[in-house]
Image (cartoon, rainbow, N blue to C red; front, side, top):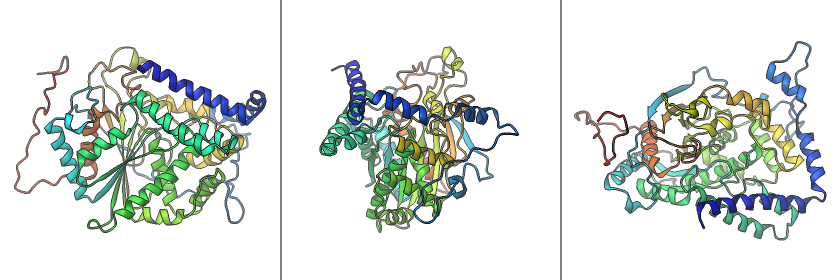
Length: 473
């Protein structure tokens, strides 16, 4: 089956499965669904007032109450929030512009370790040595939205509709969805098992590399459930690494797109206080199991977390928690780019810009839409067209937490919108793996040169790469 056939089959499976689940769940679903979606839309006057600014006679909108197990429900989730790096910190956003260094030949897609050159393997092993010296025990890769096991909540609807066959349908759908996504995208915009396996083989030194899969639903609740599952995986790696090296075990987290929002949510769960309790209550209301989660959080607090986001929209606030470091990588495009793409705002990572606050899809049930609304005060607008318009206009937004590296992944090449995934799929390509690994190592685990060693300039090129057109030879 060709690439077009795989794409058509994937889209058809999503559409048919989504429609079938809705029909099975509700008779006469057309009018019922229309009524609930219209009911979920906030009044246009409220949105216009927030967009253009409230008039003196307007009363401020009151957020919906949040759930809480003990005592009365708080009326303002934002008042429960801990110190935020994005809003409470006086430090200005930190960023730097760096060029993309095509260390491996452009277009390299092979995930076979033996097919990569000796220089590539040596360089990856050097990165692994620096990670091992820093006591990194594991690296966890987290994919973004729409490339997970249940992007449209079909599995959740199937479990509610036919509970008797729910587990069977869930296993089959998750397996088929992942297979189609991997066949369609390859290494473009997602961390597949072959990519993670190559990274693990490349860095070596006993560092375990794992791909964390979550539903990839495009709303607050889906990401909150993913963050809770991620915390459990981190706790397992930290438990296994106890006593392996000197000091606290260190876990490296690498997230693409909205997968990085799971890391921001993790800081909220790590912060003691009523806000974490409210978040767990909301997750429990969705049916997420939080049994033993207090022990999970304590295990996560016992390790060091180094977090890397790739193309993650600057949306969720990051709380200032101990033993937590973060850096961001953003494809900013070419400064001197020409043609129609810069004029249309399509240069760089277009999908990151479109993923701004307000870009979430409404949940499939009224109950979940209400739960998502309860999360808006602390996580920002979820489904809000006017908030999305405010977010997409303007230039590249730099996150206030951590340091942001603005990278020109096009590097003067004639990169198309489809071949780069609108600038959003370049981060996870195999030909950028070594560049990303070295950037992470240089930022978090810088090498300490010997005191008597003279500076050793890097060779001009490790690969027989032809010079770019117009570049000096």
